[in-house]
Image (cartoon, rainbow, N blue to C red; front, side, top):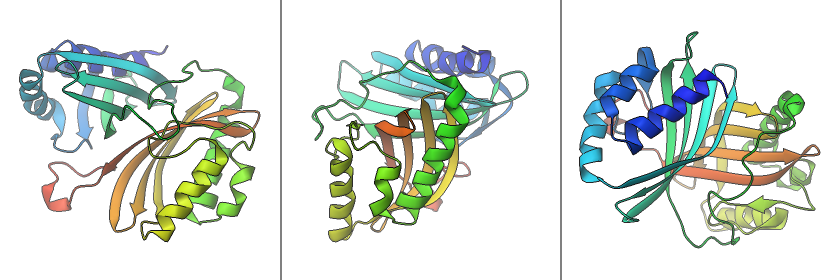
Length: 260
């Protein structure tokens, strides 16, 4: 594990789980800390301003990093949080940009409520986490980016089998059934019900080996959402998927430059 990924994990674990917000954000961020998390201002003081009251409201914090990847200057973590003995539970996906000293200088996140019972029967956080096939990183990133553009942006749903395995596709998105047919059925039903899904902009695609992560602005009917997708690939196809989805607040409510 690189120092940049270690710093990202430590910011979470020391700053949020262990409650040392100021110490952690000071230790693990660089000369600037540009923030895209809803409600959090830029810089060290913005982090402290948000998290010290959060820590006081939530004295019992079970925080677990379930997946972590890196790609060049970027580090990504997939996190489960249970607050106050399960009073609220969340899945968070976070992307960090780092400087030449591996210190964090920018942060994006998407937060979803953890759902116990999913349509597919697979939990929002279960499944493989080990990075393998590192020699396939660039090929896997290219396939995922083309899938996002071809199928989810341009609407060519009939081409989905060129990207997702028709033999084995494990789904962790809470409202989507398993298998490639479950994904097709979900996208089709949303369109028929007036909530068509369209990936308006793909802002980031990073990858490490068999895992690829994307951050996108997605319209779902009249709502604009920030969406992280995590894909696991094998033999040149997508075989597993996790996501986190958060509605983008109106611009007048932003305290930073926005989700992207």
